[in-house]
Amino acid sequence: MTATVRYDEVEVGQELPAAEYHVRRVDLVMYAGASGDFNQIHWNERFAKMVGLPDVIAHGMYTMSQAGRFVTDWAGDPGAVVDFGVRFSSMVVVPDDDRGATISVSGVVEEKLEDKRVVVGLTARSGDAKVLSKARAVVQLS
Image (cartoon, rainbow, N blue to C red; front, side, top):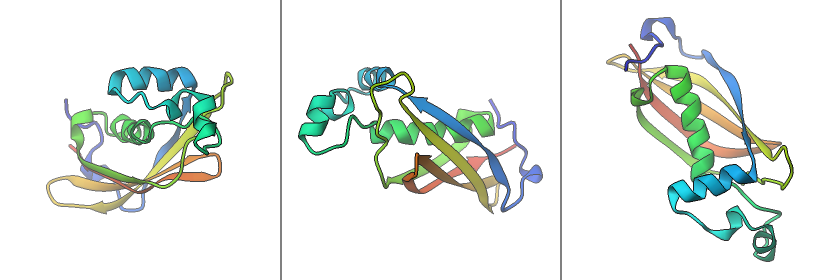
C-alpha cells in the first residue's frame, strides 16, 4: 500500500479532521486478550477502586493505539507511519454502562521533512482530560 495523502497537498498548520473512538469494558477485555495484559485495573471495578483508581481504566497502550489508528486512517496506509511516540498524561476512565468512554483525537501537520515525510502532532482527550502528551507521528506520504 501507499499513503493516499500527497505530500504536495499538505501544509504546515493543516488540521486533520478529528475523530472519536468509543471505549467500553468489552473492548478492554478483548484488548487484554490480544496484548496479554490482564492487569485487573483494566477490567475489575472492585480491584481498580481498591487500589485508589476512580474506576476501571483503559490500557495506556490501548489509548495510544487509538491515536495510531487516527494517523493510519488519515494516511490511508498503516505502513506509512515510520515513527510514533507518546507520553501518557492522564487515564481514560471507562464506566460500566452502554456508553463507556470516548477518546477524541485530533492532529495538525507540524513540519514537512525531506523525502515526502511530515510530522503530525496529535491531541488525545477523554472528557476534559488530555490523555496523551508529546504525541507525534512521522508519516511517509506519496
